[in-house]
Image 1 (tube, rainbow, N blue to C red):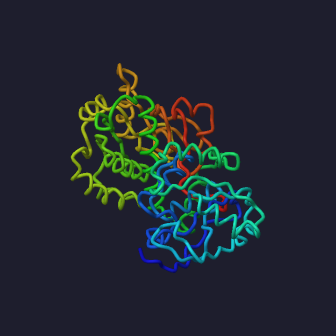
Image 2 (spheres, rainbow, N blue to C red):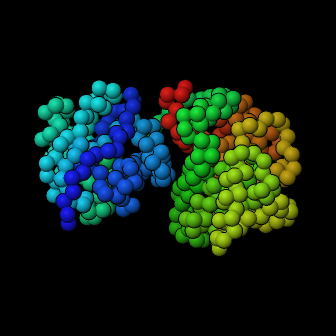
Image 3 (cartoon, one colour):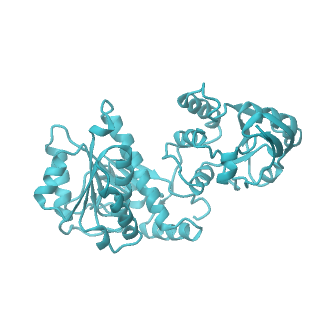
Length: 405
């Protein structure tokens, strides 16, 4: 393979909260083409980090960067330039180091790790005399290290990083109005509400799959039926995204919407649902039912292994629910109560009918087993009565909010 002189052009990932520094050797040709770290589709680096933080696998560069920053991880490479054959670390010659002081001066780095033996050797030779911080060498996540399986990699990285990083993050408890303002602030920093909706739906799908498999782990994905109850607001938009991901994973999905995608007025739910409707229409394991009768609702819910409640979101307030959602909620609770094999009920952001602001429950109100609430906790979800209606609660950290509060 031809030797190429490579200059590192990818900017490091870090901020003033970064506590550990992970260093590779030099971006591979795939990474350089993509413009970000660990870009080879078979590299398991991002799978390892997603596993450690118990989050969906990040898909975009923005999501990968955000994952690192939220968990106080700085990311770069040892070398600024070198001569190299393809992606072969063993072929590296004329190596010149990156100026790691750029990170060390700005961030309270507590430990340095290299992702591979060659990176460790080069760091100790070229960088440690200047940084005076020893590194710990972790196994390479490259596909070239095929002898090491993903679970083993995850275990090693977890043991190394957990003493410095707390992946079980705590989140502030905010009023609903404060969360709305926070979403706008996130959008102003470059992560649009459309992107947030797709992250929310993907996290909803991820948590649904995880909890469902923990309850009924002896079954295949294809044998599960998941019913999604979607309102016509942005909470429903999260449900449309979750339906898309779950269907693509192989689950049988039945999406129930009060209106067609084109009739949804809220944004970005309208745009999102219209895009997903066309895809689901061609998916053999997905069905979309618009404005169903009560008998249709009962029949669908009676055969569902899981019901995702994406009807009403955190903007709901009041004591009563309007139709058709009142009937949908009633039938959901009756199915859970009367079935010999009750479905798992997962709520998007908050159980429909439960006030995310006050913690009061309308009549009727979904009684969920698990709730995936977006960005941070809301005041109503921190009240004692939240457990009765929302079950266990998981915060979906859709963006780095540390500098926005």
